[in-house]
Length: 132
Image (tube, rainbow, N blue to C red; front, side, top):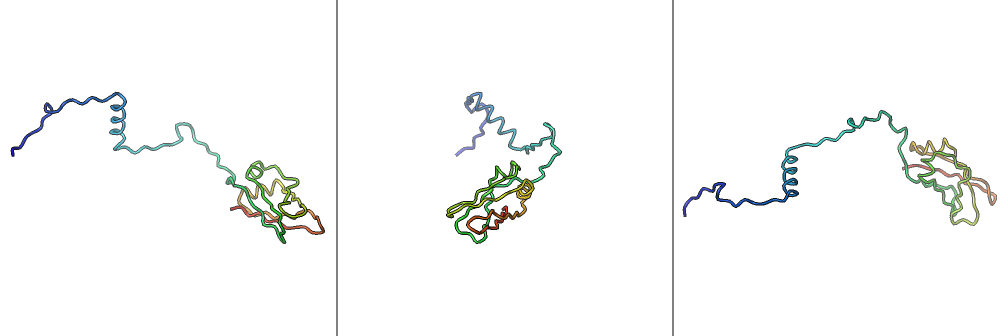
């Protein structure tokens, strides 16, 4: 067996499409690079949200017998008070809750809110909303 030195002239030139060449060139360039993306080129915002967006919040209904109380994320994020939140659920009667704009802001800030329902069938319920 003899040793053979391979030179450039011993290889057939390979043909790359323009797309393959561009892809290989980009990969070669990026192989040793760290890419950092920042928003300074577009201008950074100095404002920070005053609260964290939240999802729907289920209420815990005292002495419950089928009532369901849910304040949706859309209602919380809209921030407009809710005059009559229906908590009928599967009960045989209904109750409503009044949820103020301040209550919605508290929920948006992940704070617990408690509300007393209207009286119907000679009773009412205390509903506690605790955001996750």
